Image 1 (cartoon, rainbow, N blue to C red):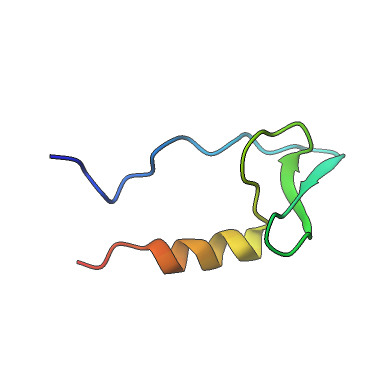
Image 2 (tube, rainbow, N blue to C red):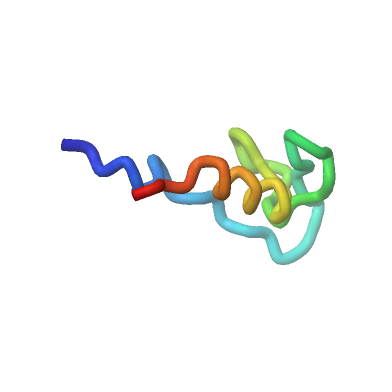
Length: 57
């Protein structure tokens, strides 16, 4: 049985200095390097997304 509360993959590594990728939802700078593949979210949108997808148990 799958554990639905665990993330599907590891989050990308954060960058210590720019250029930074922009958030796909609000276009604010994220803490991820520009070369990061896939969906990148700023800390605010990441937190809001986590609230929406949190397990209720």
